[in-house]
Image (cartoon, rainbow, N blue to C red; front, top):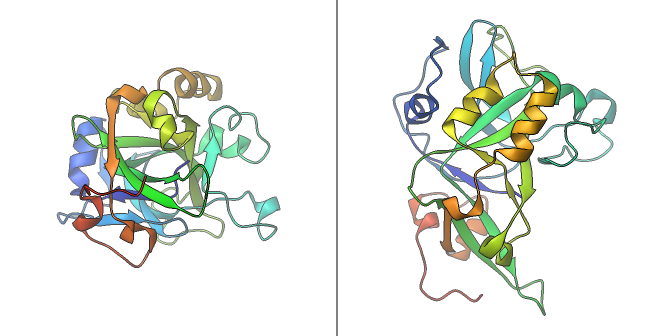
Length: 235
């Protein structure tokens, strides 16, 4: 699962890494995004391909189709095993693929005997490069100045494996820069996108993780200290 992540670099560092040779519409801020504690329901920088180029724009993290809005809180994640065929996500799988550029994410390891006791861990790529979460959603098109009602996105998740299972049994679907570029291609069919998502996520051994302070559990807390390794985890 992914319920909190970090997105702190200068926007161009993500866009340059992904390497799509298309116009970048709307420009990019020269300042670091600087978010070390991105929570659901907040507006997040989301990369998607429009008819005339790429856009990196803030979109709410959370999505529900129009017929489900108001019935329950918007979803924040979608399981890779079912998202392509689920009635809930089927339309945005076909026409709303996007990438969340990120630097790492947090998971909370639960005590086996007391689930109220939890230790946060920060998970990042071993090479410390930017990562690209596969996402789907509804967002502005054609340079619209204001988001439409119902705009939002979800992060696709996949099963954990190996040692990461000790922290959590789900994780974001992280794509290589090359696969992320394919994911954004509007010419990629829904079936091809499903194959890419199921077969080409980065393996667990591409990541490293370590315990961090419990301050990240409060969405009001922000700053680079949140991703600092601690030496005395409770789990």
